[in-house]
Length: 393
Image (tube, rainbow, N blue to C red; front, side):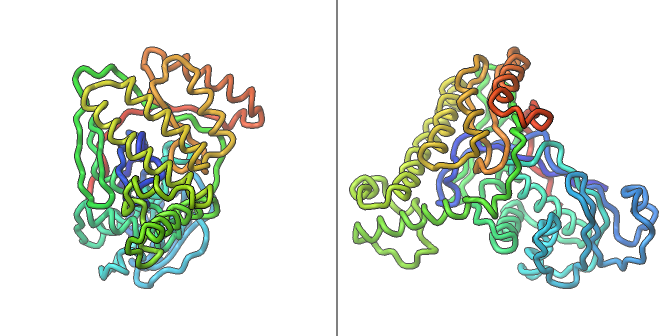
């Protein structure tokens, strides 16, 4: 048996979902696949994981290996898991989310999980967690809606893994449809799927992997979230608005006019994070209009602007990804691009002209490796298409 969850990209709406902003996204035709068998099916286990010896696992055990990471993970679905700070924490997080929600589980599985693209910025963590939740639900007779799956997967990342992401990743991977732009209001959960305009020129998604792999939990991701929340909390106090608790503050709660009135009273870094938020919301709104009109060039320019703002105002992106962005701005055949995710990992996404994709890839590889020769053998590129979101159990 297999469970597949796609990766996602967010062309516009960078770094705003945790502030309840407006975002856009697509699911890709690449993602995470778990091949699995019930834990008491020894013959099927041996077929999936040939290097395993027969074990006397009870039916409640989850046992995993990964094509992308070393080692083996095992735990029971009957007990609330403990975080171990290894790749298995995403499976443990999936179990914890279900137990926390009050579901009762009795059946585990043995499986091998594999991601089809290099890890870094494609929301692989959300894809993996959704894959595990879906598998546990299927084996235990649990049926969840799309919104419940988003809630479970978001809880897993926020409360077990420890990464304060918003709901962009999970929503894209669940609700996306092929050739439709997902437009999500992360405050109201309103979703619109906007069909591709028949007059839009053809495109493909290029994913350039820089070779850099960092953990978001150990990066500056959570610090950026705190800076945004503190900016919102401070602005409300300066303006005499009710501000309640810091942890409940979001920039979505503060009108841009308030920000402009009190911007100079914020610490410089906080002001820059807030400025990125308000400008990004406007880019999302303009991008949705451009998509409806089939204007891929205008849409792409906004994606480029989002990438530049992520570097200059949000101050994220590794040096390698920042260089990729500058190169992409200069290569003919790229409509628009920015680094994917928070930029603390290693992928850059671009909308490219299919007739020029090989030239685009060759030029990116040449110029990037001139700057970072140590990434030779680690840099790679991949062409993807937009696809449907994950099937639910």
